[in-house]
Image (cartoon, rainbow, N blue to C red; front, side):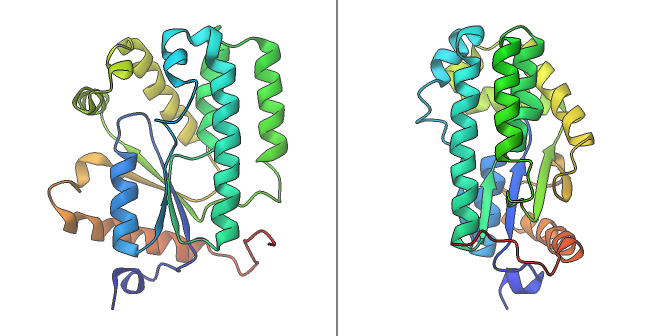
Length: 227
């Protein structure tokens, strides 16, 4: 019996990993996909044409960055469900509006007009009965110090040069966001409870929780977009 069958995780499940920068979303995505023999969907960071410009000038590029992310994530979400599920997704589409766009607007880095345009587009695309939501959102959380250490260890120059106050604010906003999130079921996991880099078997307690949550939340109605 494989791990997916052992923990009764349907082979068409779609699981999204969420959490602030540096919390370990990519590592968790790979570990779950390997354990379940699922496909992965990663955030397109290295190919994002706006990212480096954005870190140099938040005000100039925040709207462009958010529109790019929204379009890419929407296309990816549609593709995942058209394929028939069986995916682990690195970062959710919901974080874009609930955290990043809102933060840029409230900090004066996005105009009111741009923010309203972005928010209206997001509502029309995502917050409708026709948009396929994941079976489960796994929210990774930990102490701010632990997350800052991970950002430092990762060594991305544009992140290391970003003021700590930015990461502190993002950390707070993530906590506020997840406490009010209700688009799909949530499983909260503390990053201190596992070590996927050194101990692969720490994935099994996570799989047990995932299976339980999905079994409890599944509905008989079809979840997939018509091809």
